[in-house]
Length: 279
Picture 1 (cartoon, one colour):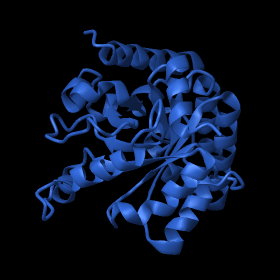
Picture 2: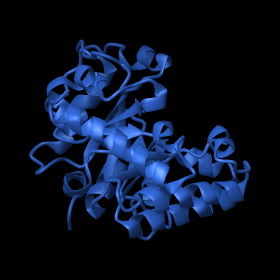
Picture 3: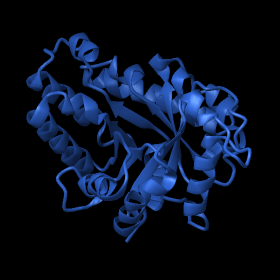
Picture 4: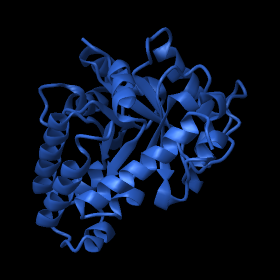
């Protein structure tokens, strides 16, 4: 069984270092001339899949924007996941789940068990009930070749109060998360399957990412204020592990398929240049 880390490494090598979100919030639906309803949601998601599913390494549906339409929205999410997988994209479901015991085990089963209709390649998760509380996710991901991206240093201003608070040993909470994920990835080749989420707009972090040996998801690029060149400041010597993530910057180009592809190509070109050490 191939690990998520190995599949991601191959996908990035073949298609380039880019993750594109599917974030069908009301403003984007309106921009595309779609109604804020299930039919608009289905057309939006289907268009993104058609435009990008066979060319982008990772696609990241934001679960909340599907869930807000109830059961029919979740059904469209299930269909979108299947379509993306059929196109060859890795699917990273942005759910940011986190809990304890049987509940986090149920979340793991929902997203990381191949028998689930919501089965994806990887999920985002929140570690703020303790990284150890996510053990059922890590275990099921490892058993089925999946991945988990754990929040570490996020771009929202409120995050710093928790993430940069210091534990008894002097490390920040974020550094503790970073170090625990690094342990899970120790020795993995070509890359570990457990990643971190580090915002592209946070500037120099003062945190050590050098031992992570796993992917570093960098959301916040484009319309959210971050540029590809900011990645140098945030990640420094860890740039080779970065998976840049765009949403509105690409999605705003829709619904025209050619325009969506061109926007993704521009984002990818910018990221390739930075990650390769070029201006």
